[in-house]
Amino acid sequence: MFQVSVEETFSAGHALRGYRGKCENVHGHNYRVRVTLEGPQLDSVGLLVDFTRLKQLIREIMGRLDHQFMNDLEPFKTVNPSAENVAKYFYDEVTRQLKELPPGARVTDVILWETDTSRAQYRPGA
Image (tube, rainbow, N blue to C red; front, side, top):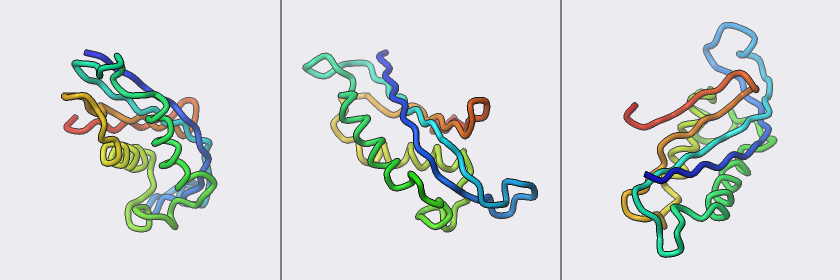
C-alpha cells in the first residue's frame, strides 16, 4: 500500500457556540492541516497523486478559510467550527474534488492542529 501526505498552514478565527469556557469567545489559531491518501497502485507516471495537484487543492480549500471568521462561512454558519468539524470539512472537500486517483486510492484521514500540542483527526468509518 502506498501512502502520501501533504501539510499546509492557514490562520482563521472562530467561536464555539454552546461551549462554556474561553473558547466560546472569538479567538483564532494558526492551523496546520495534513491530508493523507493511500492506494494499492500508482498511475502510469509512478505517482499515487501529484503532490502539486494535491497542494493546489488544499490551498484552494484553505483560501476560503484563511484570515476569515469561520462562523460566518458555510458550513460553519450551522455546524460548530470545532477542530473536529474543520478536519471533516477538509476531508469532504478533498474527497469531492480530487477525481484523478488511481483505482482503489482514497483519502484516509485529515489531521488539523489548532496548536503544536492540540489536534483533531477525521477518518471515515473509524
